[in-house]
Length: 396
Ligand code: SAH
Image (cartoon, rainbow, N blue to C red; front, side, top):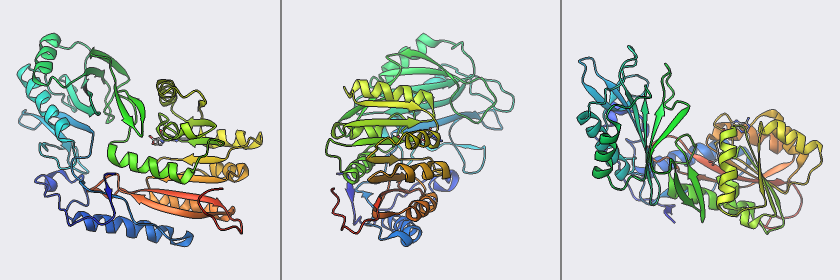
């Protein structure tokens, strides 16, 4: 496991930190970053119990498997590729980012050099002129996807560019052009055109294979995602007899990664495209006892609770804003034996735990996981179960 509890005093030593600003804790040693995150979660969850030591990384650098560069022009008309300086629209090149995957960052640089050689005009946001807006790279174990976000459909010199790109970076397995012709701060437009390969890559997590399309939400830190999911599975303690409901399931990764130990898996997710990917992921892994619903998690849970359906374990992984009063109310009506709450914001987690606590649930375990070293973000996994007089031993 690429995870430790007592890290040594590692420093990131980033040469771009001042201009970039994206990693808000990069000036601290890694041990201090972990201590700060631990203290924050412990303070917020104190009313509900003890928080176990944070699971950090043994090597916290270069973990991001998704790398993205904005393409722009500076005031003098020079082409640039980099990131937006924090809180501004100024693009700063960060060729030696400390958190990006090294291979992905090299490929981005290579695409960028070639785009200049092939005169792919950088997009100008104000004038709405030019062609290339963003370069995105996603790497998995044995596959690499390039997404070129362009302002127009017609790709000048496409074949020659592709040939040169694949020669320079033979590890690239698929190239997709994404059309974004709108005035927007969103990176991706709606239309994807596959230029090379199958148009997606596959990644293996906890023994399951998942499809990553240009538009899919997928965790960026592979090693820590496995730590997080194993912890969630441990807390769910499935025996093969349980009906599991995975709420806010995205492309289904958390539920599917433990589906082999469940009797039945139901996933609910608002985004219909993610639900389609989740169904594909179930099929890809030969999981036949899972079904996925495109709905608001609160509304769906209310329906399930009114039908008096038996759900043993609820996994919930809401967005940063946390869950909703409707969802929490329905969850209390449903009264599962165990709730495993995976949270990316301890403030909204603490707020939601208050409602579950008032409804008779107690926090049995809480473990922070460091998914985003160098930044202030912290993920927390919490196990709740009903307040009975029995001593809880982690198994029914
Ligand atoms: N569990 C997934 C995704 C977590 S991100 C994973 O680990 O990959 C949170 C997800 O909640 C997103 O996919 C988002 O589309 C979804 N979501 C946001 N609001 C929702 C709502 N009201 N009902 C259901 N899903 C929602």
